Image 1 (cartoon, helix red, strand yellow):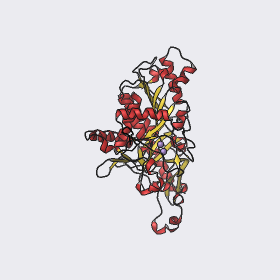
Image 2 (tube, helix red, strand yellow):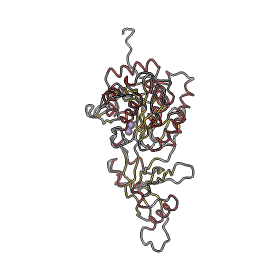
Image 3 (spheres, helix red, strand yellow):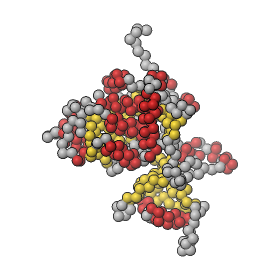
Image 4 (cartoon, helix red, strand yellow):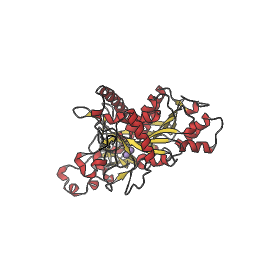
Length: 464
Ligand code: MN
Ligand code: MN
């Protein structure tokens, strides 16, 4: 083989990185783990991110009359979407460098009229959000997070189940002794959506006027007294059921990090951190964090919303004395982006669904995913050879460890990301993020060295 023929081979990052970097990698993951553990909903991630942005001197874009090189700005959309930017050296018309990721994770939401009593137990009825395997969410401690909007417009924030001493909530499963028929069912029927009712109380009220549903009314009284929440208030609430457990190191060597919501907070955090740590970037660097990816990027706070575009319009307006609609279109068109999202890690327990030569591995660095989709790439925006060439060269020069993969064997299934919605602006987009074991489960696992290389990749991309 000629000397300059460099074959592709994903490398174990632990063998590639200097020993001295291990502390740095573990410390970085400690901070990420703390962020993940204390922010479990898109609203909480948004709040946590705003705190970090303010610490680093970022200010709301509305506070600026004009923008120039070095300015650090951000904007928040309805508490569930965030765009932040550092104005670059080059003219804005040269385009933006964007890292975009989603903050929402699969979970269980409440029904609009959730409260009921059965068997003298009080329950909240639920409607799951995103692609969950329902049987993974029973018999584990669950927390309740979200907001309730009162009739007068005031907001009550709920976060119960994570602090030591907090109660948790619970979805039961049938005991094995009576589970003969359940065992014979298909896995996705053994626990179905109708089984996902959350136990929230069991002491009945002694109120003589209350003949039925004594437990339900005791819970209503409790909610009123403790939280100022009435039964009707559930109608205007975003309440989410998330795993109560925290983040833990996994394995004797502590190289893996387990927790809820790596998909896609691992890219949200590293994308944000990269922007916070950036030195004066060449191009204007932008981190976009969105909601609703898990249900199709719909709605005002999803990637399909006009919010991101409006933010770029506001930047353009404040950057130039005069600009045209065409200038704005060109800025978007000349931009390029990494769509930060996770890919499936090779799992030896289920090797049959992976193509070993084209799958992502834990500890082999950030995964570049040329295309997503299913059934012959349907639904994928697919990155061009030219753009991947640029990213590959950039990462190699910076010594960032990367691998390439698609999600599973061809025709085994598939998935999508927000990449296609960025591509609609006619900008270059490539999916890039770490590999995850047991994606969409209540306790997902990533490799710490992959989290760190994802951060390095985003930082390099945004800065250069
Ligand atoms: Mn994702
Ligand atoms: Mn997902």
